[in-house]
Image 1 (cartoon, rainbow, N blue to C red):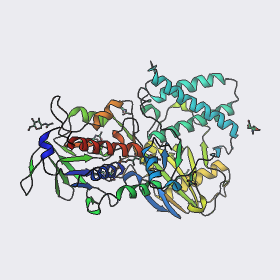
Image 2 (cartoon, rainbow, N blue to C red; image 1 turned 180 degrees about the vertical axis):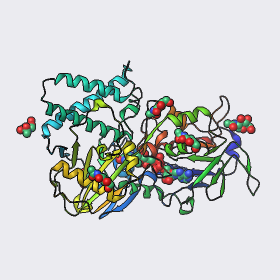
Image 3 (cartoon, rainbow, N blue to C red; image 1 turned 45 degrees about the vertical axis):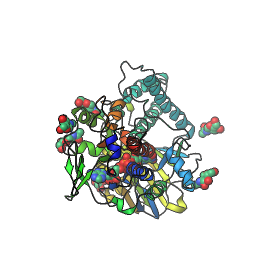
Amino acid sequence: MNSKDSLKRNPKVVVVGAGIAGVGAAGKLLEQGFTDVQIIEASSQPGGRIRSSQFGKSLVAEGAQYVHGASMKNPIYQLVKEHDLLQQVYNNSDTEWSVLTNTQKQLDPNFTEEMGKVASGILKRAHLLAQEKGYTQAKSLADVYLEEVKMFLAQCSGDHVDLRRQKLGLLSMSMKWQCIHLATNGLADVSLREYEEYKNIDGGDRNAPELFPSLLQKLLEVVPKEKLLLEKPAKQIQWNRSFESEDGSLYPVRVLCEDGDQILADHVIVTISLGCLKANNQSLFEPSLPEHRLQAIQNMGFGTMNKIYLEYETPFWDENIDIIGLVWEDETPLSGQKPNLVEWWRRVPVVYVFKPTERYGHVLVGTISGKEAEFVESLSPEEVATNFTTLFRQFTGRPSVPGPKSVFVTKWFSNPYTRGSYSHISINSTADMIDMLAEPLPEAIEGTSPMLQVLFAGEATHRSYHSTTHGALLSGWREAERLINHYSIK
Ligand SMILES: Cc1cc2nc3c(=O)[nH]c(=O)nc-3n(C[C@H](O)[C@H](O)[C@H](O)COP(=O)(O)OP(=O)(O)OC[C@H]3O[C@@H](n4cnc5c(N)ncnc54)[C@H](O)[C@@H]3O)c2cc1C
Ligand SMILES: *[C@@H]1O[C@H](CO)[C@@H](O)[C@H](O)[C@H]1NC(C)=O
Ligand SMILES: *[C@@H]1O[C@H](CO)[C@@H](O)[C@H](O)[C@H]1NC(C)=O
Ligand SMILES: *[C@@H]1O[C@H](CO)[C@@H](O)[C@H](O)[C@H]1NC(C)=O
Ligand SMILES: *[C@@H]1O[C@H](CO)[C@@H](O)[C@H](O)[C@H]1NC(C)=O
Ligand SMILES: *[C@@H]1O[C@H](CO)[C@@H](O)[C@H](O)[C@H]1NC(C)=O
Ligand SMILES: *[C@@H]1O[C@H](CO)[C@@H](O)[C@H](O)[C@H]1NC(C)=O
């Protein structure tokens, strides 16, 4: 403990970003007795990637919607219980699938279930290879996929050509679905070596379409209103200096805002997305980040996943169905995943029926990732509607399938304060880079006490829970604890 710090005036902390990481960090600091905490948020509302929008009869999640791991090991689930929000978390029931093909077939559920097992077997194999470090040739997740698909096909050499096409189409669908979970262009971008680093929490996934905004409100209850400045984008973080305030005190950090305001601080917690760190790599920090960090930021994986909400007057689907799978019999995982913007809708592997119907009306939500997800942001709702109507008519074989009465597409890629959806460990990166990104600046020099001028939190800084709300929250708490420990006199 640096005794100079403990005797210093009340430390001033600026948190950049009011997503769940930033709000979590600020809340913890305030609860632990820090009083001079200021959150600055670029957009007009807090929440970041957990915001909702009005659509149809209700609010729908633009970002996070599932609790990944419904157990007390998950801090999100703990908060849900603590704040009595369990009624907003839907309990698991069997998921009813209806899998349709571009040749108007509805595939036998037993067959699709069997193929689902083949697909999850491939992922299990990838996990094993990653655990055993048993990759000689395979570098990416796609490499394993291809090898395993080839082996699987060798066992089905007697198949009729139609059956073979259906199998390949189904495996293609599940590959696209994996890309959505990973927010990536293709599985060839995802590191196999690091595939074991992301950890699942027990308890399975639970649908909670309105939970996250409520949870954020609860977390904000301990943050006085004046401590959260909205529409206040930070332009540059100047560190490793000595800035003098009007009262003559010295501060090592200064946050320059887009509107010209300058905020001095002892510590800044940066929670902006990896996508924004990439896009603003030349200008966000002064002095610039050390070269190895810039390299890491450039090489770490951050991709786009968008949701496409479609509202209908009357459903054209069977209302017992939860998920509609879309299988293209002319696709095969063996040809690799090349972007196809002309037929972008081929990148939508499944469409969920948004439930409960009494609450949301007749709403479908499609998910899409990769370049096609970026492209779909440039289309008008009418264009998206036209293309989905063609798609559904083709797959059901029913020209009477109506068009949607409204369409809403999320725009995480063009959002200047996100620039994508969430992170993954790309073939060019390692989990160690995540830990490096989470290290405070200036980088620690052995034998001296750390100065903790700039701290980093946010989804992409959590080694094992990146890409999730619990990872983001834990990263915010981690950085708050770092400051709390720094000032506690032991
Ligand atoms: C489509 C989608 C679906 C998802 N689904 C799930 C799910 O089902 N379950 C789950 O657990 N997770 C899910 N996630 C991930 C989860 O939403 C995120 O991991 C988490 O919300 C990230 O929180 P954060 O605080 O790290 O970042 P953010 O929420 O991005 O917060 C950062 C904040 O910083 C602000 N900001 C950016 N630049 C500046 C600047 N220059 N100055 C000031 N402020 C700035 C931003 O506006 C933002 O409010 C999903 C994400 C997306 C996009
Ligand atoms: C789910 O189950 C829990 C406990 O059994 C209950 O409290 C909660 O209200 C249920 N949620 C919904 C949406 O039905
Ligand atoms: C699917 O499997 C179940 C149980 O194994 C069986 O009862 C049913 O007849 C099968 N359905 C078809 C269409 O083959
Ligand atoms: C990995 O790095 C290579 C070489 O710089 C580059 O061509 C490729 O696009 C990168 N891939 C990903 C997924 O970042
Ligand atoms: C920080 O400032 C010190 C003293 O001015 C200087 O020696 C050091 O190189 C600076 N560090 C960085 C990363 O700019
Ligand atoms: C870094 O910034 C430069 C200049 O703004 C930009 O051209 C480049 O694409 C950025 N790098 C990444 C990885 O986004
Ligand atoms: C997709 O939408 C575009 C723009 O509305 C239209 O030109 C094109 O014909 C549509 N294609 C299909 C297959 O619906």
